[in-house]
Length: 336
Image (cartoon, rainbow, N blue to C red; front, side, top):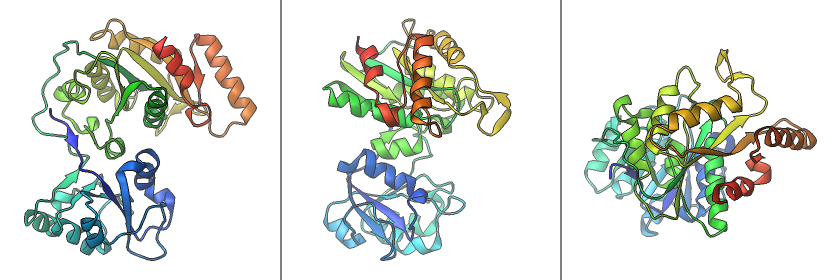
């Protein structure tokens, strides 16, 4: 199967970072996959503490760590000179280096030379696997639920991860399927759908969510929005290839226009339900919406509860803020 897989456990590399907001990837890994995060590496004593043991590269190698994850972003999103000695040491120790930076690890001569001397790999999670197939449209075994947004940055990854966590708590057979770089690091595998050549997006989605047991749910991280003027093609390919049995609409309650595309009014939740059902029925005629996940940040508690109640009453579907309510109401509808 053509899918990127990361070796575990992880050493979270934080450089000299002291601000958690600049280490969202590392913090997200510790929050969602603590069992995979064995230690952290800081260049300074005053560096950010994610609650993990601090280890040197040598200690990490001795402890059996397989991958160093760059968990912080520098200004401009590239490699920092001060990181290089530690990264080269890790590569020379046979530890894989994993990053989602704008300039690829494989483009750095020092890292490339170090990795070629050992069994280590330089893994740029923004780079999709080679030889992805064209979509077939053939129905696969197992069940799938996809997050569909009214816009970008509308809570699709958080909702999917929350659903996976809540489904597993109930004893359901479910796995998060990552389609973006941070999600891939959290899941340990996945495909960066937005980096795939357009002819192969549906095929990549099929690879991301292959045949599975009849009672198994793939909880698929969505990308963009099928109404987005820039990213609709990615969203549609992911939808068609995923063949979802169900979908959740993810929406930012305080937003009226596309984020960064201010001349485009945000579609209504109803419009997203209608269009997602129409397009998705190409490969799964039984597709249906099972709930609405809303980011209500900035609202008071009463405003949030009134908003969710109004949407739920209007659409006849559960409407929740996963940060506050969890996702059990949507799961109830999913498994009913």
